[in-house]
Amino acid sequence: MKNSFFLVIPTQQNNPQRLKEFEAKALQHWVAELPTANPGLATRLLHDFLIDFNTVEMSTQLRLDALERLSPSIHVIEDYLRSRLIKAGFPKEENDKKILTVLISIEKESTIGYWMVLKELTKRNVGWFQGKNAALAIQRCIKGLSSIIVSHFIMGMPIPDWVWIDLHSLYNLSVTIKNSTTKIANDISQSNKPSSPEECYRQILLLSLADPTGLMQKELLLVYSFIETIGSLVGLKREPVNGQSIQCIVLTDEDKAPYYQFETSAKNDSAMLYLDFTKLFKALKQKEKLINAAEARFSSMHGLKNDIGKPSAELLDYLEQRWLGVDLQGVPFFSDRTDRYIAVGLESTHELQSALEFVGEKDLEFLVQSASDRLLSGVFTKTGVLSVGSLVSFRKTDSPEHKRSLGIVNKVIVDKQSGRINFGMQLLAHQSIAVSYVQLDESGKDVPQKGLFYSAKELEYEKSYIITDSFMLKDDDVIRMFMNNEDFPVVLSNRKNVGLGYWQFECRRVAEKSKPISAQAKKGYDFI
Image (cartoon, rainbow, N blue to C red; front, side, top):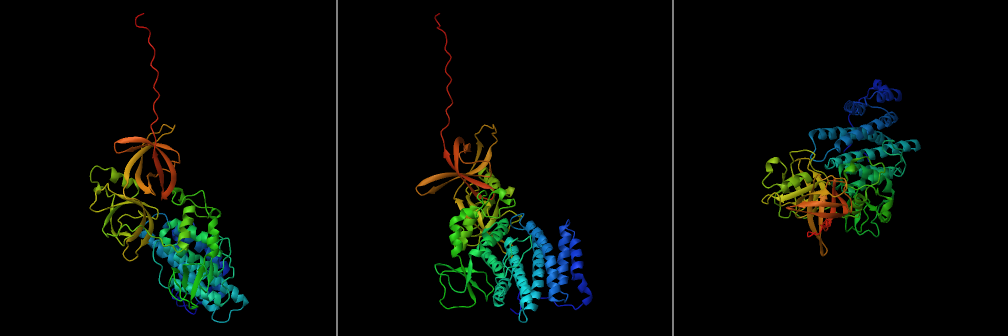
């Protein structure tokens, strides 16, 4: 790998007087003086430093040592900026786009520094000592480019040109110089476990194959970290994998992400890699060892830090389907390609379905277009309204407001050029009804709560469901439901977390408890 398409090395300035700035003592002092209590200023200082640092000509050892001293601060800033980006859904505010620009620039400048070291080391035959430095530099380059990909995934944006081919070329280079399996220590903030260039490469391949458009932003980092623990169960092969009907292919000489293919050519192409999932699929037969059983995927509590580092059962099911090569697809519900009005959230949908007259002036709906028979597309005037897991109701433009279908967003794609948000969904019901309910317990609380009621036919039976945003309800609870002009008791069962902060229960109407008839007091004889 003589050149990088994405990591362009800036013009070098020969200025020996400046080299003392990057020696250990001076750099340690500079890092210690970073205003960590002011992340905005710390980010700017670090960003400017990296850009300037990469223009100064210096020895490979001095550059590598300086980068390693800067690395913990870089990752602290990176984590902080990413935490800002995942606070709200799509579309993003202008401020978030500025944050992304700075984040990508910091990640890129840091990676360019390591690439400068690696390029110099691999100009000639790599000796034993240089080999250790080369393994370190190549692992850091792969992790740096992977970070750029992860940051774009978080923002739902396409990966920049040349990033994938540079990643493939770096992996091939690690194989050529026999460093692909050399373990390299990572920062404590990143991972306590050493990782090789091959493991880092495999980690980003598996994240890409998980189709990040179907993951919540906060799930991306969890999944990326989880892959690190199971990545050793996936192998990289030079020939098709026996027993896998669908082959996962990496074209290492093209600027492409890995992809699945049913049929492969019999010819032996040295530029092709195949991912072997045999051991992983065997391990996934015992999912209870890999999941966080206490957590539901779309629970509102999911936003808290996951100290276990394991996915929920539903999230692991999602990952397994993607790694089996099953495409993430919404329902083909928009084949007529007509426009729709959508409302996001239970509150908006409930109000629209409860209204006796047109309430459009309240701005509860958005007009969207069909991008395909499975995707809707729109330019939203409000920011942060949509995410994977959002509850959405929708209707045709010529349908009344109360006649709404119900679904959960399962895919979000951002068009960087137009700013449009494309999204697909999992259909819950063709028609829902706004209801209210009170819980029948001993607490005495009778404040009505809002819910959405619908029916669905499963096999030969029709079942009724209610969706609520209360996580306090549980199986076998009895509620009194108010629907249209009647009310009746309902027992809840089969609790399921179907959306971001939303729970679905199967409903079964039960008989009213008859009030005991008090015995009539006896009267004396009227003739005495």
